[in-house]
Image (cartoon, rainbow, N blue to C red; front, side, top):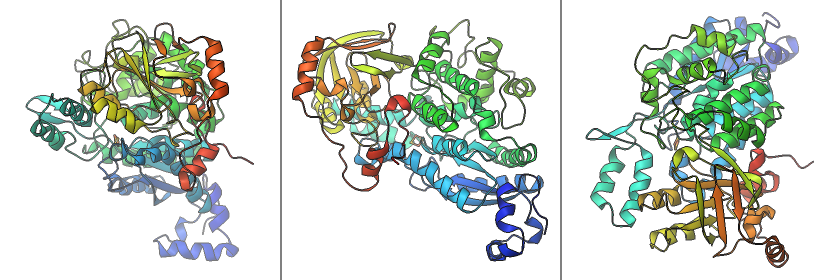
Length: 564
Ligand code: FES
């Protein structure tokens, strides 16, 4: 039995030598043999679940990763982590577990990798939170590791009209207002998500997949092939081999996750018009990597980055279309050539991002309809703006890519949860010129900062997407469209100004100026502060209550901090 091969840092301690015979005995039971001791031991962590299509297929990729590991002199053993499916939990109490699951996933990876002395791991994700959860675990453990996306679904079609899950949500809104029949809704429902894989548009899952390449944590080109593409198997195999090389050269996640890598990822987020959840997850990942990266960085990067990619929900195309024209490397190359990202950062390939892009062969096909030139952008500045003001002293976010409106002043209609707001939209009580305020749905208050897609889609479906705004301390789905301001911080449950709003207050949203203000005299707000009692978190036991006691503000990425 060899002892302590290169990269076998943790496994050799646990499995080599006479005294480790009891530990080793269990390895023989799972198919290893004495020649495996001393080789790097890699976990293949798979977020898998049959609860929805997003991670339905990920187990199938394990064998290819293991084969790649074997061929580079390593041993791979697989293990699962959980999935909370965003679409199935959307608009229900289940959605409160979505962001929480990011922490559960990171914690579960830590527990399994450390407890069993793995030297590093490949993380395979799919649905929204599985991806940042796995990446956070990489940063936390800082053992050689690579992320791989399981791929998104193919879009559905009605005639030649492309449809995705976002259409089903919006058809519900249209049906509620008598603008679509039950039959039309059923037709969309039946075809919207025709294969396994994550949501097809540039919602949160595909956003995080693009960011995994921009950060350098995933192989170039690996995010855009659909879940059904045979290239998934090739990328899984190559990912296994690449981890083998990382063991050899000793590159660890924190060598990759440096400040410039976060700037690159934030630039891709802004240029692509990706999900606002990308901000929350990059903040949390930077925290875990020990990198100071704040909302101010996003603000500055948003101002200097043109929005150039036309993907749903803001544009027309889906990930499968982006894949045909070159995937993330096409976007990265355009940004690199324009001097908007840093090509010197290291990636999991062992090469710099710039070198990797130089060697990457892009297809020679027209692509301007999906990814434009930086000098001919859809908008001159980034797809997400950071807002600050009397209603959000610590910041709020708005996806400017998903609306044509840059300034909105309206009258507040205040709700302390999502359900009553949805009911008001359903009953047709919400009128043009109003700002729907949904509060006590932040990280601590909800707890778990649910997404408000059910309400925003109902507004869009009712034709109110550009005439009614929303301000919330909750989150939005990547599929949300309209003048929707989220992550308002501090949240209501932490005593933020949003807690002191009343029906009839005037609210100003100015995305050009980066402002979110309540047009009420400060003395009046102070008076209300003294008389209004802040409501406690809505959970008193179980996981959500534990989470509420540890979670920080959305402006910090809603990370959980131990109370020692
Ligand atoms: Fe899983 Fe959209 S619900 S990726």
